[in-house]
Image 1 (cartoon, rainbow, N blue to C red):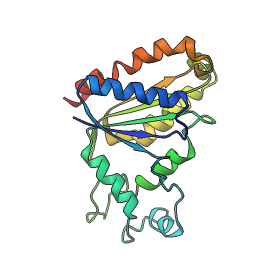
Image 2: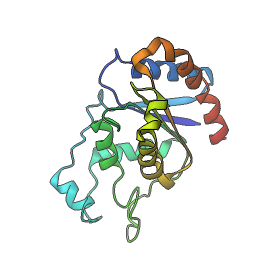
Image 3: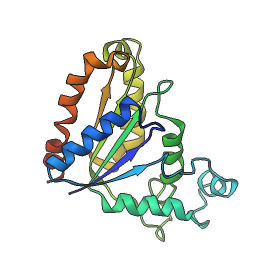
Image 4: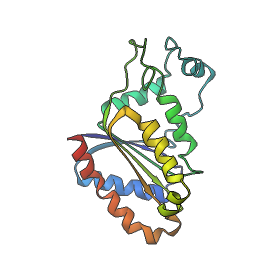
Length: 200
């Protein structure tokens, strides 16, 4: 079982980075093979060029896919499970992760497969997990509709039919880290077992 973590946060002093360390520890404990795509450390290019727009916006699959995007495709193809880990900023993921979806989920690969036989299509992965940290408590995010909105976008659209099993975990209440840390740790320490269950 191979796990690919798509990690998106600029600071190693963040709570999100703390969660990443716990996640790595849990995967090691469960003897799961994993690799990390740290989008900030990679300086992943998130802005689409005009040439890319002509390909994506006009669904012109005769135009080439950029090499850095092909690299991400190869990483996905090696994985059984993708984990997206990021903070909630203004009710969504950071722009760098949004740009990853914009560019990596290219036409003919992640969608729009008609008349695209020359392009390798994205495989259906066994498990997709979204983990996001949020300052507000989960109850508040649910009351104002943000939790549902984020799930609709990440689970129904971005993960969509590309995963056999998919789940979103919102680690809310990080404005009071000491209060929520034990609960969050318990959640993270259960992830390895879930991966084994879904990817067996």
